[in-house]
Length: 331
Length: 250
Figure 1 (tube, rainbow over the protein chains, first blue to last red):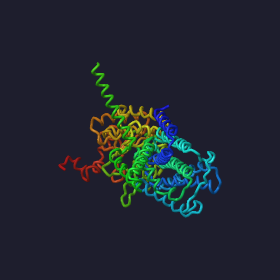
Figure 2: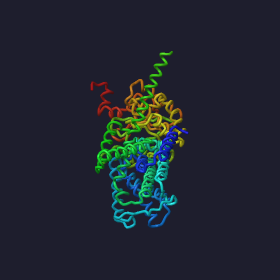
Figure 3: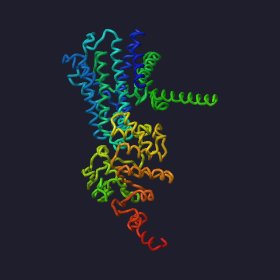
Figure 4: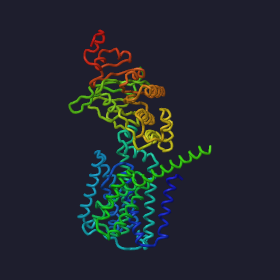
């Protein structure tokens, strides 16, 4: 097993043990929200971190995942697990479609960001009037706490299911980082012309990344519905989730396997601290996000994961240097 | 002359009102080094961009290995075995030298392990073995040019288009690269090189085309080219050949 896989196994094992020690519903609820954001951020990271395509519209995929999960159950009586699986597929499809339209026309950088934002907003407006989504009222999923319908008595069970999804996303990103597809994706991020000259079909690579990215993010949307049992246009396709997705990835470290997970835990912790410290003043968590984002961009452009890697390299160098000096002293 | 691997036939390229290439033709015989020289703005890099699929010609055709490939996308041409370097180096800056070369090697090696091994082989061929773990962004000009060459070679090309791989290098560095280019040719890879460094082209190329204002104004063996009055005038201005020939005082 490679070192990366061992690290993933350790992190997942530690997180899996938390509900065995902590029984507080508040803490578990906090961790579930943080892991959900980590999952969505990991989706964003595939396209933004590895592919260099900064989307401002991942709500389009989150919302599709949420609505497909809810609507298939409520209107068509589908099994929740089947609906969830279809929601992931639908998210991937929406990702491929938006990707095809934007990449084919050569949109990059801020133009790509704006167009993805526009797609998400269009979907939000459609969802807020279309009868099938429940329009302005939203869609409620019936409370039915049975594992067969993806609902659980205990928060711990929800937590473990979500952790399994996060673990799967970590494995997907780890695989991307260690395969030809990932090498090509990063090459396209760094320099599309040079990549094309080396036989890389940039369009196809970006489209593949967007499809995977959208599928992971849609899984987050589907889980949201099963946990909160409610979805409306603002939740599903609102800009809040697009912002959370890119914030956690950027603060945690774009283009790293653990970046979004670290980012989500840090950002959500800061949000909670802010709430407690200010007595729940509305909007203050956003101020905190903004401040943290500025600090990270200024002092740790590769995010917390990048800063940690740098610190480790620095210590390794110092230790190596000491050891070398020691050797010389003894020799 | 050996059979041509690449044939460029009456290729023109218009950018708005500017005719960058005007019915330029050339042929690159298999297994040889063909030179392409010309003053600044002659259209050399434009011609390279067209051959490698980064630009579509306004007119004319490109044939490669018997197939018509005019207007085919760059990545498809790379799969056919056409590799190019860029005059202005285009490294994947955040990646190590090893990972840079591996992107090229992935064209013929699916597995990561194989591509990385191939990258190491190519790196030692062009003298980058010691820099494998360095980030590409930290390379000197000379090393970055070698990296361009290494990445292109890693794709396992049949035809290698070298766009000024010697420009910006000092004479000692040029002396190192010249035998490397020759060794590539000796492995059976056909080379077309655009070059400003005349001496290098003259020692390396068997056949040279001279491009000026988008037209091929002369071709032939290097020794013939340097004596051609049209070429001298293209570089030094109208009347220069006569003045030089007459031993004049101009």
